[in-house]
Length: 429
Picture: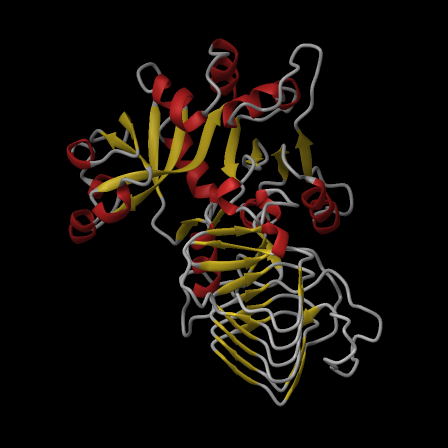
């Protein structure tokens, strides 16, 4: 794997994840109480013995840069690194990144210098655990120019993805972007070629691209230099190259979730609370997910009822009820609170007198969730200050609302409280 260089694409403006992406890049969005989305592909690389990793970013990259610098410093004299390459303007190219392929093209002068055989191109906003060694091995065994990682799909979800058709040898022969109706049925393939059983192949007759690719070094450089006007891998470069190049499909049959929308992000997080076995587990000793070490104190729970939940480090919970929720680092929940089906991201710091008395009468709203507050089906971003006797319950069952001036949004019926928002005592949402 020393001959593989990984390139993680930091994604665009992340409008579908707004307001979580208001102050941060998509890969820097917090996940599962203590991680960030970028930790998933970086950890997969480290566990696959790929230690040369670039992350291409363009939007709001300050917190992502800080996280990567603090979390991934390979000590000693290894060749390993995780480095951010931000969009920059140069005399030759005064434009920002125009798409996934354009982002790589603008840094090709740097990527070319590495003595590697393959480039592994990854996405920064997916949740999955994958051994890229098997992926690269399959790429080398089939002498492919490009290998795409694909997941089998049933009919219900297939039209949300870019689909492809393969021939008997696994070579990709046709592409279709989010087809519907008859065009969708045209894309059915025999997925048993890729290793599914006959039953599984019948249930999932489509293959969808995961947006993860292995390119031969010289093939990628040639494609990017030849087709300057093509800016996207999945929609333009790869479909156009299927005629002349050996493009292979590699089947990934594990859990994979694209968490590009608020609803998908919310569902994927809360799915982690399941027992005995959630779809994705952070408890795999052989393939750990790395993140920044914070050295926080353990969480303190005073007379609380907590069911089906995950509680991060350094939390203080007093006499409250928490059900089917995730509490991030340094979360503070005061007495009399009820939190259900929610994601509380916690805080970046403790206020002085962190273990203070909870008092609703002094008019100051501290970090955390104030006394006697009820929160249901919500995402509360970091450093939010929610007063006493607040009800965040979406009482009118609103599906979409933009109330940024009041500190919250509603997307797909999920209330999202913005980072650093202040919600006064007694507010009802």
